[in-house]
Image 1 (cartoon, helix red, strand yellow):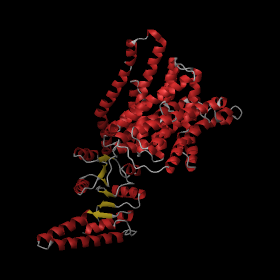
Image 2 (spheres, rainbow, N blue to C red):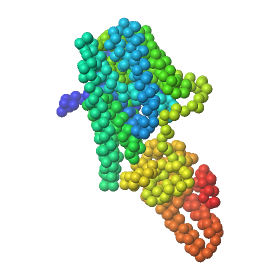
Image 3 (cartoon, one colour):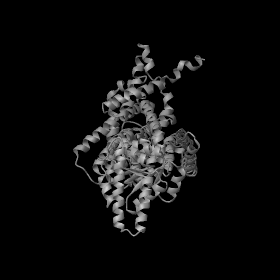
Image 4 (cartoon, rainbow, N blue to C red):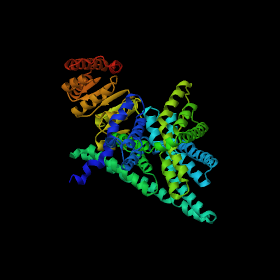
Length: 606
């Protein structure tokens, strides 16, 4: 039996990758170097051209190397798909429509201009028209999988540069299928010569029809089935099902299924995942999905970066370092210069245009797909193309460096308070409400009445569905998870209101929120006096016990009905409420009177 399993050898490469993720990348993070660069460096070091080349002399080194990169290739493709899925969750169709000017203006013009100029350069280097065109088309694209994580870790995604960069990368992803069709048409023209006529080219272009049909089916099918699927999984919680595990399984199914469907239609797997994310961004399950998928995305993207590092042919670099680095520098400089000019033409501020140009200057992962297609079709020169692919790999390695250069340049340049009017700010609120039953609903109505914005979260799918039908911004999710609170904007909100009727869950949310923000005003619903005292000990600003408030309300109504002046009644009620609060605080193990909420209490007593 042991032999049947090969002694675990088939898992050796995966074990080496996980070891790299747990050792090499944390070291880079400690040195304040991009984790992306850490994965890339790990790929070079652990690949057959790194430590692997010494395994003949030192046999035990083979245990520390990745010998078969193909084993990681499919996981690598999944990593890019997960990245595009998460991007889709952040976008939504409305935001995508708002970005259409940059996507179809800046993005598409960048592809056309860079392709034409690079093709002309390669023709000057002696390549025939068809080969130069394939090289230009492939190298005009940039690396979504590397650029976006680098920008995200630097907090640059929400600014003008982030929007312009993302819009251009999205246009590039959308253009992959047409570019591949164009390569096929070029091959047919090159093979047919003078015999190739318009009907033949038309038939070649018809190969785009399955791609268009595939996108339409993905969108229509997704709108029909996705929300019911997630609603069914969410409801399983009430029946004791493994809700979180089922959520993860369903997310994996959606991402992989949409990717496979897109590939069957002639599109990229990542584009199918992007469409699935866009569809789910419109649902109440978006934030819960993000929480469950984030760990998978990071790990699988790490596989992709390691694969890129493994793919670097160090022998080719050593054989002609000047040529390899020269082509990489030429490619990056030409693209960066063209993108800078186009970004300014489409209204991107200078500082943001510089950052966008530097990050998009290097080549991208789709260059390998397009150039290899050109090799298969026989219209790309094998020797020259392989050398260009090595240069493209080198250029991808420079993306984190480009981000550092952009940061240094922007610090030295004067600030430009000019926004890019293309992408509306994501929906957010000044108050976060956890629990949207009767109490949460009333709190939301009162906030709206007084012009205060809010967002809300509830773990009951029926409550969420009913609230959204009424037009409230309510998401499904477990707010006791810190990751979900971050996605709900816990770092920016002005107050947190916890209205759930389950004391244990209220405690969990308060603990999670207070750990994330010490200065956040937290107003929580308490079951009774003892629960209120416990909440003060956990760090709430104000605890509102149901029994005490009901008693005070009864007393207020009785006194008013007996003819006592309203002003005197309200003053005495507020005085008694303050006394109760002091009693609850005194009953808690720690006095929390220094919480930053005196302004809130003073408004309460007016």
